[in-house]
Structures are given as structure tokens and as C-alpha cells.
Length: 86
Image 1 (spheres, rainbow, N blue to C red):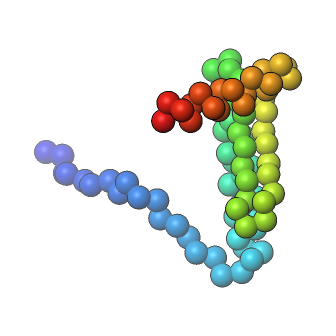
Image 2 (cartoon, one colour):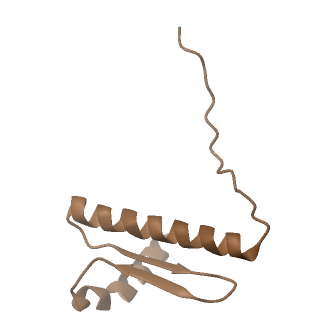
């Protein structure tokens, strides 16, 4: 018989004391997110755009797997369409 194991649906957040540790953790997560986006782009033959904005400083980081600028010009209309449908 299998045991009934409840999987936690919440993400446990690690709390770092120092600003340096927070910065390093943020950089690691950003790097791994961009790496996953690049892998998805290659394996699924798709264009991927990932944007990250740090709320506190306003810094923005953008990953774009596409080499076509024409696709990005349609991005604002795409975002507006998605927001309207939500």
C-alpha cells in the first residue's frame, strides 16, 4: 500500500540577513530563470522574452531569445491583449 503523502503547495522562502546575500541569491535566481528560458527556446523552437524588474531599485533585466526585432514590436499589443482577457 502506498502512503498518502501531502505535498506542500507553498514555496518556503529563505530569509537572508545581509544585503550581499540577498543580492547574490537574486543574481542566482535571475541567471537560472534566464537559463531555463534559453533551454525552452531551443527545445521548443519558440521565441521567449523574460523581463524582470526589481521593485526596490527599478532595475530591469530582459532576456530575448529572438534575433528578430519585428517580433518585439508586436509585444506591446500582445501584452495589452493578454491583460484585457484576464
